[in-house]
Figure (cartoon, helix red, strand yellow):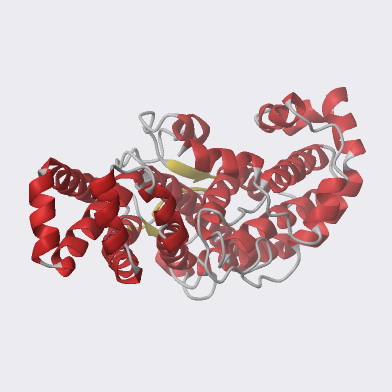
Length: 435
């Protein structure tokens, strides 16, 4: 998990997409601590930021970068806009370099807050639509999908309060609301991309094993073995052995991938974590049983038939690989669903605002929004897939999700997404839009 988080924040060798390259090159004053300061700025009210000499100077220096970012965020989704297509992805495949995207995204949110505070509504909305554009692009990714999903979740988390503030602004026009609804709807429509991302991750693990279990690499490993074991390995570790290892490991990786896909679908990481624990225990037991056999037992198996001995050795090798290739993906499940809930709440709130403009009254329930203002009422995956919750009181309304604790707080307690992301034990509260 730490490795994945580092890749998310710093990026690896794969460059940003064309357009984002130029925007990243134009960034100024955002190295080291200055980049971390962006999070602190985003927690401050726009009015305070607009009076901050440091914040306004930073934004002034980066207007060229922001203009390029807005242009790049408007590019149509291709599935490979942010990372090139790879025929056989593995752990050696360079990951997207998302560090510049993070900086540009936060700058756009910061600029939107300052512009809105200064009454420059059109410029603020340009930035917010660009931020929504990047979220939509991430949701369409067909390569490096799991890392893109993590990036998508982070962007939704950072943008949620800024988007919500823009919706509450009485100056928000219908054109902006409709454009933002379209962008967030695009991101929501692509949510099935996660299924492909998880399948890609399974293939990434299997391809990594294929890259490392080869005739040449096995020959090097055999040189480290005692004479008799080296002799047996020379006889058994042929192309059929490699095929057996790949088959056994592949079956285990597919089973783990299916369990992970179900965990994401149901927003239930516990069964997946139990499955992985059981799989690891089985692999450990298999390794120990093979290693505990005496030299004579191995010799008898070898003399009794190469096929049986090859099968046993391949099983041991596969169990060893299974034991070392088990990332803690279960922790990503609630984070993904928190992002999904935030996106769903915003989409429903947008639809309520558009309904109010058209009908001059609030809807009695979210079901009234479909299909004219919303294709369907989004589900609350923290409430067993029931529709999002909605409360109205005269001219005021709230849309909310139960949040990671699964409790209905009636929108009286709001989840601190930033604190919860750092410590998932701090899960009290709902994910709320209030107007």
